[in-house]
Image 1 (cartoon, rainbow over the protein chains, first blue to last red):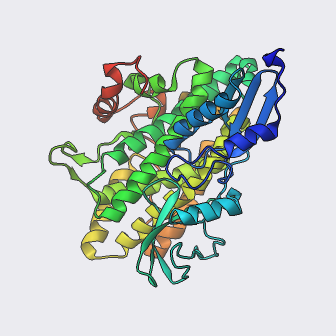
Image 2 (cartoon, one colour):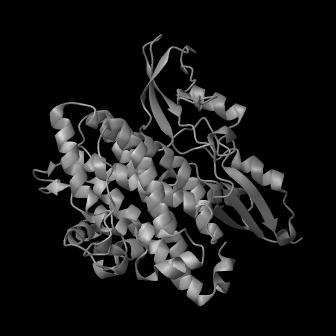
Image 3 (cartoon, rainbow over the protein chains, first blue to last red):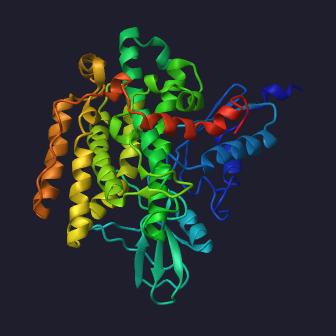
Length: 167
Length: 270
């Protein structure tokens, strides 16, 4: 009866990671945000490779700690390591459909579907769904969010800042 | 990524480290000067934007310091906070004070100077990042490709301010032209790789200084011509080269302030 020989699958780790939330947005997980690039299981070592959304994001350290805590709770005999990697770079189109729904629930519009040649964004208000919105500030309260205003329901709201390889 | 560092050729590593210090110290000092503006920007939306840009930029500096951490076997926090001024490799432009007065007392900071410095610096950074994204040192190239996405918004931001103020009132225009003169004299070492330049280029870590200067000038030409103002010239002769550890007094007060808390207890976990 050796606990050490327990074989765990990548999927079982991914399932745990789906419960690790964004520290500031508890309606989306790091899987929803597309931050998990790879899970490697070798012997008693679990390595989780994470793509940072924005390089100066202070939540990254907290996310790292939360991942280790969550995975250790389930697989306590394993050595759990979190690695931040930059290739491929995180882009906002990595956010899943479930992630977009989670963001809306929190009052944050998903990243604009499409950025036009002239830099115009297509964003809907997360509260009323109106497209009659204006961009107030590309920069917002955190590195990954912008500030917008809905002219239909007269609510200010935030949207995830679009980040892509085309920039 | 960590394993490959152990097998680097010593001469290559020496030059790689030098370039990494230049990049790290540039972004670090630039974001420090930016953070001094917190609460003082012309309006609240600008305060949010400027501090967000400073935060991103501090993150970029961290990326370079973390690459150095592995090469130097010394903590990135230490590299950022504890190195004396003569070991700093940042350009003179980023260490310059924002204006007269301490930010906690009665700062008389000049917004025109901030806009011009930030625009010129960010355009220079864009030219460098484009070149670094093809660097022979892959971990650096990966970071450059990621930085590039964030830089897009920074450049858009400062160019917009630059164009708008120069298309505004007579007073605004005069103050901007005055600021351009002040920034122009500091452009020399911004594009220099210092005494190790030759091999830095030879190792294909980044393209040569002249190529980058040309690209920067081409971008500035487009904007300046549309505004009917003369294009800034990058001085060929200048007295101090920050890449070789030569600095003005301005850096000393910056280092004293930014490392004050860290120095209280360097062993503690922040």
